[in-house]
Image (cartoon, rainbow, N blue to C red; front, side, top):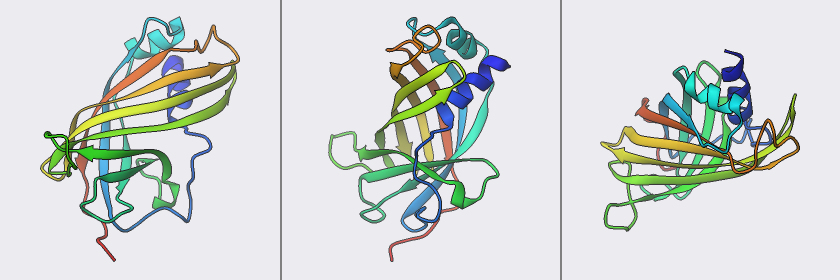
Amino acid sequence: MKNLLVVSSLFFALVGCDQGPNVPDINVADYRVLYSNATASSSCSQELLDAANNFTEYAQIYRLHFPEGNGSSRVDLHWKNEGDTDSSYAFFAAGTLVSPDGGPGTLDDGQLNYAGGAFQEARSQGTVTFEIEGRARAAFGDLLDNAFEEYIITESSNTAAYPIGCVYTLEYTAQGLAEQGGDS
């Protein structure tokens, strides 16, 4: 359990992300994200490998914001823990929806590609910097599946605990919540 807490606090408490009163509430779609599996690259520390091997499912809420209006392919991603208020949403990545033919995609039929960071965190075993890259298939307007996020360590003051190049991957599916806000 300690390993899970270490990894959770490392990769999900995205310190430095904007949050608070500027959280978008129009042109958004909220999803309940269920993380179901984790893997760690062989370059990760034993502690991170153990955390991936002993992973326990958990959920968060993602808010997809379409800053150019609903139906646009540009997306900003925000996250919060289940049960937190909307003011707790924090921006963590930007992305695009791409259609199967390579043009602009939609939530009905597309692939969401996104990236965020660099995020730096002071941990009990040193300071670590990581970036996030993710991908998900969007379907039916309210489903994200075949989805994953990679947390890639790019800098570390303690390479034994947090090796540079370590990639911790979370697999997930996401189900849309009640649609929020429209163009205004």
